[in-house]
Image (cartoon, rainbow, N blue to C red; front, side):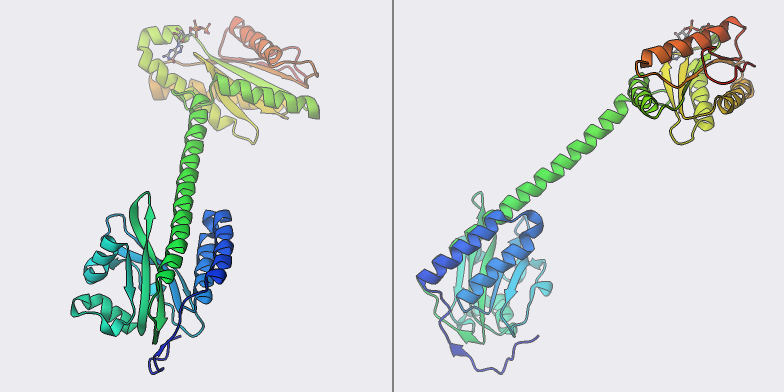
Length: 380
Ligand SMILES: Nc1nc2c(ncn2[C@@H]2O[C@H](COP(=O)(O)OP(=O)(O)OP(=O)(O)O)[C@@H](O)[C@H]2O)c(=O)[nH]1
């Protein structure tokens, strides 16, 4: 709403009594001390409202300077009933449009205007702006953070004027200090929060990296140990079967010797990808156990289903010869059981290791199920 420019200008007191101000300042300080960064708009504008109402002002505001002091923006504002708000249009105002104001604020840390109409010619852009907003009297005092001028708190009288008293400046300075401290504290808290979030993200990334095998991108041995422990506990609680597949590349040392270590790496990556593609149901995961060995963990799966899936892996790995130019096969050991309360992850590893040992003994390029596994025995 636009203030009525035709309204007669009056001379009016625009101060609070010392007693009234004392009461007001204790309310403001209580609110600002307890405010959090997300409440800053509400609490600082409420402080401005108390300052404005208590001192019969028409508009109270906070402006913050850009870090290089080249511009300023109105960041908080309170207006009395019937007084137009100007905050939206008073953003990023270049310092060069109001040199008179900026110079005085930087030099004196305050600016007092009893009557805008009496400002000197040199006040140029500043005076024009006051008159455009029908402001007759205004006062602003600087806000400082660590000794640096960072903005100001001010107030206007619209279509009326006053003669500012020493007391008014003192009151305004007290409020400006409190608001500056609050803004500084909020900025520090926000920076801390941002740093904390960055640290959490970096830690999560590190934790993920610590559980990831750099060659294949699969979960590594450390990750496997954690996941397996978790799945074992669940299987014991729910008394559902837990199945492990150990997949070991056949004659991998020979393959390395004949085709080179880099080629061996390619084979490991390809086998890892095949396993990931074949065991991607919810709860299933594939890990690189170490060297040329992989482990697949399948909670709640039927043994028959898994051996069928393992046969597909066997066949798919054989096809790698076309892709990589060297014959590649794997041996797969399977162990499946409903674990007892005393079963450990080492027990499970031992049993699946027995199965893969059988597969190697029986000629490699095949699947062997540990005889202790529940369900059908299946070999291929
Ligand atoms: N290229 C490559 N080789 C690796 C890597 N990690 C371990 N190896 C090699 O993998 C080979 C594993 O060989 P062995 O454990 O003797 O097994 P194998 O030759 O596959 O024989 P069987 O398992 O009995 O069929 C060793 O020569 C290791 O040096 C790796 O990250 N990249």
